[in-house]
Image (cartoon, rainbow, N blue to C red; front, top):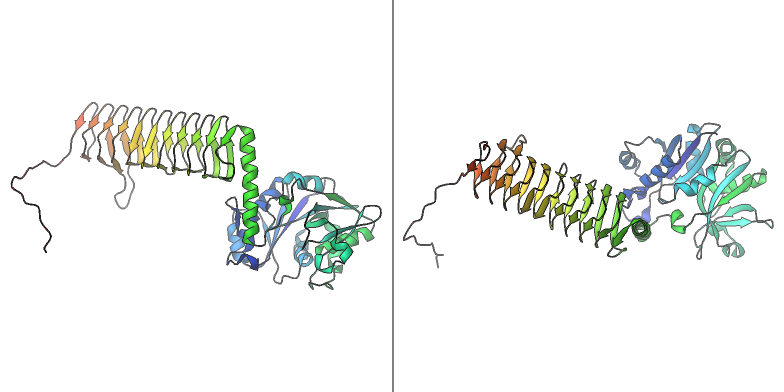
Length: 455
């Protein structure tokens, strides 16, 4: 089969967005629209992805600097036909070419695969959709035999043609050889004064090619974004699909309209997810996980039976089974919690490995630290891991009890079974089963008078 090349049109300014950011970089589900389209082209197995850019070209390039994309510059925006023509020099003669749009982010790869799989020299594939209100869209004109004859843009359509409800999505597939023949013949004699790519439909019919039509399952698959209202509608539709998927896979949602999935979320069964929970990046949730309201979980793995209480933030962390997190906990990157651990309210961890059954109950900071099993960390404890230049490690053995308001000045090690008295500042290692107390001597001064404000 001939190679598939995808041309993505992403040169428009998007003035109706009222933004300095190029339109195709506005996000849906936490990812720029153009990135969605590039990902779809990749899933289709495209040999090469050609992205036509113009407005904000440098910003668009920078947003995809890790992607294997061939950038094509369109210095003047003279229409879709002119845009595709800019990519012609980079298209092999034997290629199948699929044209997509950087502001149409949610077309499914499965919808497009049916278009391109049977594409050859004797046909052209076109994606259309039937709409209740087709205002603004090019109409699909069919002949008496019901075959597609042409596409007429809304501004050029007659009253009879405006009554047609089947419209053009702009997405089509054709051989590169045909494009080389047809694009130079396009005319800009129309209401917009532009070179329409859609005019090649009539050329295909004139040359005896069949026009194979496909339609998406939902109109939102081919919905373009021209303003922030449409962007918000697209976001809600996407999130509704994610909520439906989670419900069918075994999660209960307090309110399916109040959950955001901005990445890839994999789940077990019998989960409970409360309102306003946001998932970002790649997140895996085990079975019987309970997540309270207003939590943010990013690039993390959560074990079976773990409960995450309200208003907790978890990022780049791994949590074992039957752990208890929050409320108001913050797990920063590099946190690893073993089974049956507890990180309570107003606790922050960073690059912390916490052993099975250990507890950091409240109001503490544990960073650059390794805790063994069954460690109890009292309220107000901090690991002083940063000396202003370098980070240092704190190592706490199994069964250690750390009293409240303790400062562990790293590098420092506390051996198995040791106890730290409350209010201590620990600057030296503590041995096995030792009690360490490091406090200033208390003085009680009799007859002391408290200062009063000067009147």
